[in-house]
Length: 308
Image (cartoon, rainbow, N blue to C red; front, top):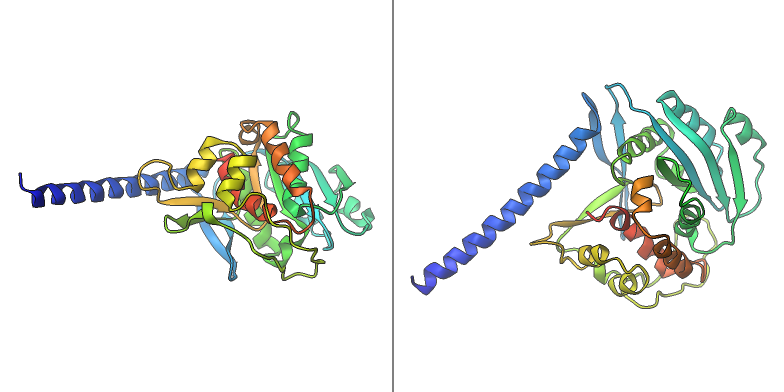
């Protein structure tokens, strides 16, 4: 066999394997979405907005099928925005057979009046707890997951007080309803699949200037950098290292990340991750308010809990 034929054979084999991985990837996603509901019409990945650094996606689902029961805690990371919309959200979810076990607001900003919110929740327990203003929303979620690690409901819905700045009203409520039902099987917060050319492991955040009115503290770089080295030191989960360094399987096609501080996750996925891992991640966020490690954790949620 000539060298030319050998080279041609190798090239054809590579193309075949790549196309096989692509088809497997697409079929996997199709089967996942079809498994969520029977006779349901879903509009997936409705854009919230496009910024220079990230693409945020909300999700809208018009449910034509009989909904399945879901139990959840709503975990709210609050700093300075109103959370009056939580009453309407809870009423909407309950009307779609979502059992809200409790609404837990973790406040890192000024005190706020909860009397109207208690009335709007119509008996759903409201727990407000003050936390030090460190680590932004990701530290808040870690705080909850660590504290309730052995007492979690079937699903957890994590939201920020500023979620309504990007998507509001029933569009937001349907998005939250959708990701809650999807979380019975896996995490699927507002997400994006980054292509193979996007090297998540090389990600670094050199500065952060939020568009909202929150006070910006001095930026604290992660130790070590970039994200791949930070994950190796502080997460220490082999599957996470494999995904973010694009070494998972042959020709990895994409990595999934969840942006925007809005996502849901099932209890089973949380409890597959040792509590010590969550504690190590939280320790890295407690060092300040404006920390690079927070951007790392934001991009790791989907991978840590799902690994796909």
